[in-house]
Length: 383
View 1 (cartoon, helix red, strand yellow):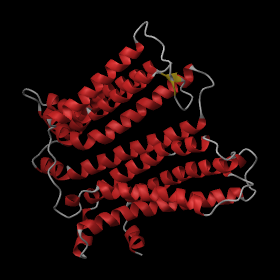
View 2 (cartoon, one colour):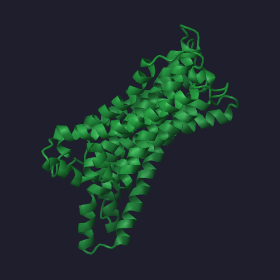
View 3 (tube, rainbow, N blue to C red):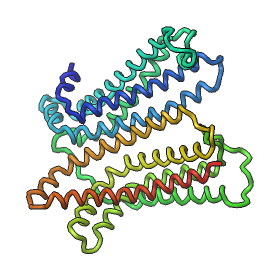
View 4 (cartoon, rainbow, N blue to C red):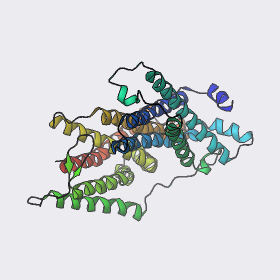
């Protein structure tokens, strides 16, 4: 009843976030039920069932990531809701639970709708092409689909509950985020990127002996060597972790010397937002780099494309983009007081728009460097 009353006060962003969560969970539930149907249709002891189940982990992790970022943005976007809950006697822990329950409820709705469609199609409606995916002709254990589908709301709810800090669930409790990065936060990703690059160069050097145990990649991407795969993984992780510090350095570079008001606003704003924008932008850049590398390989190798990885890539990419949009909305809400103060002081709206455009250009340049390096290393390691 509480969530029904809460939904009555939804605005367009709240409703969009809720519907996107339900839609993403419905797609993940479809992947899980397809893996179940295939497992029932295959022979007992077939190892492909485990592989299909493992293919469901990337979209499940993407939905959990989006749920975490969206839940973290709720206190900033709807402070009046948090104020009302606090006035009603709800503590920070209960508010975290309510936000997580809202996310889990959306995921449950999407999973239930997918389960209903799955059961309807099993009732002799689906054609022969879908029969193996639905496990038609085999009795469906009642506990199996319920157990699998429970993973979606549980995972998303836990991720949402862990994403909202206690200090940000109460009015006036938002903490000041530091703008700098410690030496360890910078040294670790640089070290990972250097070590990964060295491993891949060793694996790809001219005249290197062929790897006796090649790694066969999924999604029709051929094979690669252990050293090349490990080197790319380390480099990709290092480049993703360095995204936040790189954005901070870019902001400081914009405000270097005697900056104009345009450069000063853009640089200081980017420096202040680097910590909060680094993680979602790094995830989105990594996903885009992997998708572009996969498409390039499929185009160069006709007949290697696979439909299931393409659908999963679209879901992961959509969740990563939605997470970036949620974080941008959170940052915009936090900077509303600063923007209003600048306007009261006589700052031109054109100047503020120019600062946003310059900041966007700087962020795009930094992401182009990290994403391009990630995609280039991935393409070099594919045989």
